[in-house]
Image (cartoon, rainbow, N blue to C red):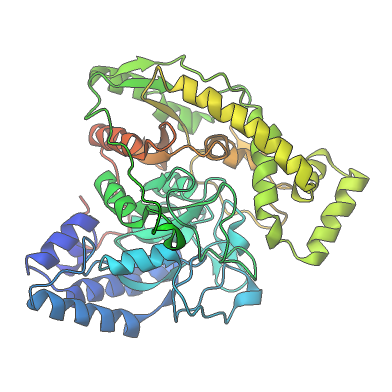
Length: 492
C-alpha cells in the first residue's frame, strides 16, 4: 500500500494495520506529514505541526508493538486537534491573537484520552477567533479554504479539522460544537461528524477566552470528525465518560442502539421549514432521502414533528448560546454590547447584545423554557427512532470578510438572508442537548458536498451513529475532493 493510499484509510483500518505489523506508526506519520506538505499550502488547515513530538510518540508506539503491547484502539494512528483544545507542550491559541504564544502544560481531557488510546498527535488545525464563526479565519494563521472549492470556506468553527480530515492530512480530528461547529464543517467538507449528547464528553481544556479551560460552557460539546461512521463510534467510545474528578462515583453506560439497520427503523424527516427554508442546492440532495430510505425498508414519516416551534431557536437557543460564549468578549466589546442593547441600533444586533449581557435571572428563566422544549423532544422520540434534518441552508459558501455573524448577510437562491441562518438548524438541535451525527449524502448540482443531521433522543448517541452508518452505506459517504488525489492513490 502506497503512502497516498494510507492517508485515505479509515481510523479502524490504520489501527488494524499497525496491530498486524503491516505498517508501522512511523510510516503512517510520515505518510500524513507528506500529505500535509503536499497540499496544505492550498488549504491552510494544519496551522501547527509537531513533527518531533509526533515522531517520538510514533517510535515509542512501534517499540510497544514489537514487544506485543497495544496502547489501545488508536495505537499508532496520526491525528490533529482543533486549536481550541489544549495539548500539553503545544501552542494553543483559540484563534485569538492574545494567545499567540500560549503553550498549555496539561492536555484537555479528550486529548488525554485519545493519547491514552494510542493516537499520535501531529499538530493543530485552524479555526475562527474564539471558535465564534461559521468560517475558519483569524489574525494569526489566516484563512482556511474548502478543499472542494478554494474560493469557499470549510465551515466553522472546526473548519481546519474538517478540511484536514477530508483531504487525508489527518486520520481524525477532535472539534468542538456549540452552534454547529463540528456539524457545519462536516457538511461543508463532505466528512462525518458527531455532536454528542451534552455532558457525556468532558470539555475541560477547551479554550474560548483567555482564562478558559477549567469549566465547561453550557451547550458546548467536544466531538470527533472522521471519514466513516464506524470511526465516529470508535472515537466516541474513547472520549466519552465521566470527567476525571467524577470517576470515583460515576460512570457512563450509553444504551445500545435499538435498531441494527434501516429496515423497520422509524425515521422522521424535517427537511425544510418556512422559518428557515433551505436553498435549492441542499433541497435537491435531501429530497432524495425519503425514497432511498423507504426503499431500504425504513418507516419514513415526512410529517413527523415534535411539539416545538422552530422559532425557539431564535427565542431560546441563540440567546443561550450567546450567553455561553459571552466570556470571550473583551471588556471593551462587552461595553459596546451593553451600549448597543440600550440604543437598540438594530433589531438583530440588539437581540444579540441583550443575550450576551443578560442577567443571571434571565438565563435561569430561559433554561426553564429549554427544559420544556427538551420534554417535548422526549415525547416526540417515543414514536420515532431518529429525525433527519438539514445541517445548513446552503452548501459551502464563498469566503466572507468584514462584519460578524450577526451583521453579515448570505445569498440563498438570489435572496438576501441573515448570515446567522447558517447556524439555525444546528442550534435548534444543539440547545436541546440532543446527539446528532452528520453523514455525507451527496453532491449538490454545483458539485459541493451536502450532509444531513441524524438526530436521536437524549443519550441515544449509538442510535444516531448506527442509523447514520446505514444511510452512509446507501449514499456512499465520504468522497475525496477532486483535484487533490495523488495519481497513485485510490480515494475510495
